[in-house]
Length: 219
Image (cartoon, rainbow, N blue to C red; front, top):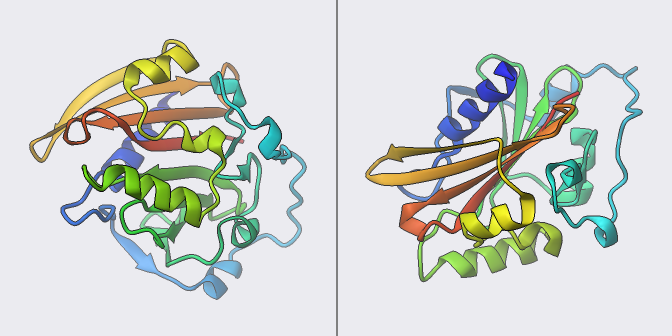
């Protein structure tokens, strides 16, 4: 549980809305993918990838979150190009435990994917819509179109907290914090085996509509 809380704290601190709609970054070192590839274990074979099908990706409980944005649980970072396309940059975090890949073709709805620097497996997927009305819905439409986001994932963006709970059930935890004269509500769900968790984030400045989703996978 402490691992989950630490990861979520890192995600919220790192990717909360910035003044110009860009994620706030921790101390990082800019690296190119060729440098990162040198750190991989070429003998590693992934045996736990859960196949993704857009026809069966609907989510009604935390147990269903074994895919997000077309990325399946257990996927390697080297599969991301075929799913999301080219990145707009990548960094090592300052502890070198994670490699973070950014997808920013839609400025108002950046996507970040954290992978393990040791295994290359996807560990965290974070999508945030940063704009307020009248741009909020247009940013959602743009990111859904640009990254071909399935309806089973796109539907959560813009939901109220009540609507999310009606579909997902009562969350394990919820909290409310203040940041830069804004108020942020977060509700969190964990799988029973702690293999996955998901957090939904609502900003007062966006009328408490769900504008950010963090999916965390553990192996």
